[in-house]
Image (cartoon, rainbow, N blue to C red; front, side):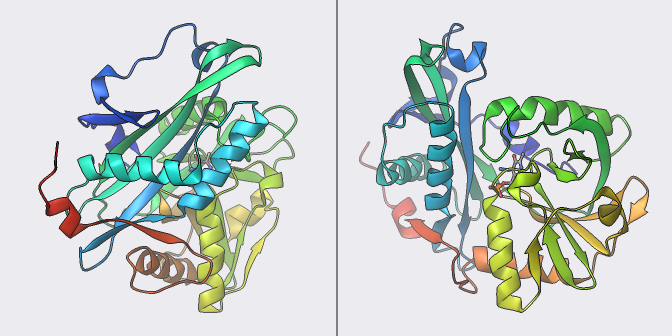
Length: 318
Ligand code: PMP
C-alpha cells in the first residue's frame, strides 16, 4: 500500500482556490518565468481536516500553527504575505464546502508561489489552495532505508521552514531507497545524526521513553511532533526532543514517522533492523487519532470546526 500523499496526487478535483477565488482545478496557471520555477520560490503547508466520529462536524487540525509556519517560511525567503489568518481559514472553508464529502477527510495544500519579481525585488506571490480527499485505512507498518543523501545544514538550505526546494534531496533519497524495496528514506544530517524522513519526522521509543530530534538537527518544525508531545504528556509517557545518533535509531525498541498526512505511522524495519509494533508508540498513535476525531480533548491541540454535515447537505446558492 502506498504510504504517503501519492493517493492525493492521483486525484484531480474540480476546484482550486487562487488568491481567494474559486478556479477550475485544470485552469490554474503559472508563467514559465515565475521565480517559483526558476528559483524554486514556493513555500507551502499541508493542512489536514478530520470528520468527528459522529460524522457531524469537520474540523481542521492546527490551522493557526500552519498559518504561522507559512508566515515564517515566507518571511525567511522574503515572500510577502498579503492575507490574514482569518482569510486563510475562510479560504480553506470555501474550498472545503466544494470538495468535502461525508466520511472522507480532506487534506489541503496551501502553496505560496512567487509569480513576479526578480532576485528579491518587487516580489509578488499567489496563494493557491488545493484539497484532496483522504480515505485512510490503518496503514501497514513501514520499512525504511537510510539514504546516502543528507539534509543540508541550516546555512545551506534551511529545513525548519517548509519550502519546495527542500524536497529535491528528499525526492532523490526516496528514489534511492525505493529501488531497494523500502517504502521511504531517512536522511541523516551533515553530522551523521538523524534529521528526518522525506515527508515526515522520525520518532523513536526506547524503554518507554519517546524521542524525536529537534529542528536544529535538520528537520521541519513539525506540527505533528508537537502534537505527539502533547499526547505523550497526556498519557504520562516521557517525551524529549534530542539528537539521535544513527546507532540509537537502529537499536531503538520502536520507531515511527510523524507528519500531518502520515499521522504517526509505525515502522517495523530500517535497513534490516526490526522494531516492536505494539509498544508505547502504538498507544500514542491511538490517542492521537482519538484526539483528531474529537473523542478526547488534548490541552494545547487545536481542532477548529470548519464545516458541519448539515451545512454540507444544504442546497448551495450558486
Ligand atoms: N518533514 C518533512 C520534510 C515534511 O514534509 C513533513 C510534512 N509536512 C514533516 C516533516 C512533518 O511536518 P508536519 O507534522 O508539520 O506535517
